Amino acid sequence: MIVFLTGGTGFIGQRLVAALVRHDIQVIALVRRETSREAKIIAELGAKLVQGDVTNQDSMRLGMEQADTVIHNAGVYELGIDGAGVERMNSVNIGGTQHTLSLARELDKRAFYISTTWAYGASSATAARDESTPRSRSYATHYERTKKEAHRIALELGSSGLRLTTLCPNAVIGANDHASLGYLLRMYLLKVLPPLAWSPEVMLSLIHLEDLCEGIVQAVQRAKIGETYFLGGEAHSRQTMLEYWKTHDGGAKSRAWLAPNLLKTLFLPLEPLQRAVGLPAVFSKELVEAGQISLFDSSQKAKADFGFTHRSAKAMWDDTIAAEKALLAQRTKRDLVSLLKPM
Image (cartoon, rainbow, N blue to C red; front, side, top):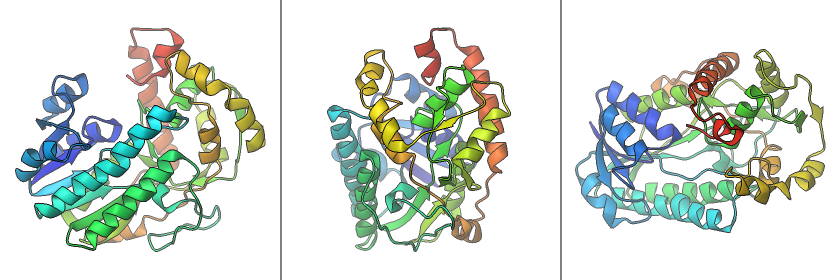
């Protein structure tokens, strides 16, 4: 099997390349710059590089023609973004999905779209939902909005000739994470995380990065055409998550649980200040909005159809924290901003 992969240089993509190669699947990876450090990493893992961009359909044609399967994994995820970030997210998440999957349909390729359970909006905090659950709320963040629209585009293409399987990970956890939760975990380990939190009852079915990538490979090998699958881990509340963190050395062991509206007021003026020092707006209005939403999902369908498995929630956090500590110890730049950023 030869896979044409978008998003191969990102947080999920690099581990996905490694997993595909480990299972003797050839990878042709679309990269914006073949000379970038991230591109060189996946080339060393065994990927063949093709220069292009999901926002330019013609740039993908030659690489996709050489493959029999397409995995569209490219996407922009960030909370608290400014206007330029919104435009980039629109272009990649929505436009990139349209360009990639419509080209896959034209070339009659088997396709897998890496969506997200955010496309379904909020779940109940008391009962797990499955893939048949309809969306019933407006979006809370620009990321949710763009992924909801991209998910719709993918399903429309799947109903008009594209041989598509849609995979919907829950929020993805792992060392060196570029997303808000990765920054918050590094803040905790560096003992600079403010002892504030909100919505302790929120339920999440977070998935470890390595479990997700193995699940994607299993899906590529055995999932059914025309189906959508949730890929998540053992559900646990935000309060339980912080209890897992507290078993490891880090910041304050107690938290003040504040009203979300108060935190939105506190965080809003901090957004430009964080960007000014070279960080994303980790503490943002969107972070609070997203943090009020449960994503309590069942992966039973994926387990039944292609053998998806995942580690326990405690093991997920223990493994992630151990790996994150190891990375922090390797840092040569020891200023706080450098330590907080992913390597």
